[in-house]
Length: 431
Image (cartoon, rainbow, N blue to C red):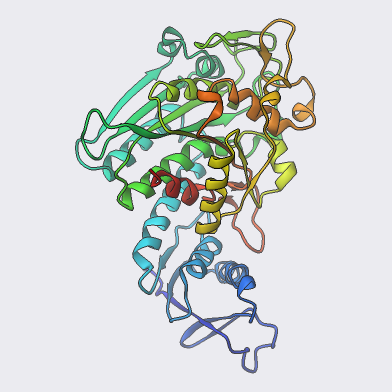
């Protein structure tokens, strides 16, 4: 039997006796009341904390009610009320409810995919689920798909995805979806989304510790984020022609797995020495970025749980943004602020592409020191910049430091946060 919805209202009043004056949330026969502070800037955080309190008390069905619920406050509640399991239900209110329901739907898809175990979500399954979602949401007949699997990748020259995934019995997959809502075959591709879809990352021969490996089912967070962002944009009425590219693989150890010292030669002529098999995300994204460039889009946006260095710099509170194009970066930061998502720009200059030198190839995939050494996130972005066209004009790289939490706290549940999804969805609507 499903438990009834808990009605949750906001109030500017102080808690009444017998509740302590400092109570964040109070519960009575008519539901729960979240007591807001006078400072408007502090209200979203307080609402998210209150939602976590209610979730901790076992509530899993909530209905928001009252005129004080702004869009930002409702989404703050949603972020705190979510959980890995069991599934929760949440009913929004006021005239912003339809938009929030769309955002919640895509965030729940993102969380469900990210929380699947590695056995449940091998590379092909991730690609199939992404394609199924986009076909369901896009106008009928507007989606065309192309997929390369296993050794087809090597035959087509996608050396990064092939080599990273060749050590697993589950073959690597590269998926490209072309979504053309208007149906004009001559329509310009405005944006190509590229997502890192490493469905499990052992680190390869540069093996992670057991603790470091435990949550690596979430290393496909970039692929889940860009897919959910595209889904949200389609629900919002996207009219532009876009492409989605997912680079999916398992990074495992076996007699076939790629090794330290291997040299990969990409289709654009860049040779890469593998000095760290745990720096695999940039190797698969390089293939995706080269494929993205073939469409000659106005912008390329990639997203990946790429570096621990970004987490060291920003914690789990902000996603990192890298760009060589200042105008594109400014637009992304403004968009993130408008949708209420934390995003911080970290340094990237053209010379960062030379920060991983090799004696045997044009570049190495990292520096042979723990974490890639100082500036590791910028160096990884510099590596990626070798594979984007037009000197990075229109290219945005999201290093998703805030997309997943190994453990919950007073604001967030354990697992995927969906941060970054709304920002990328909003960017897709820009001509």
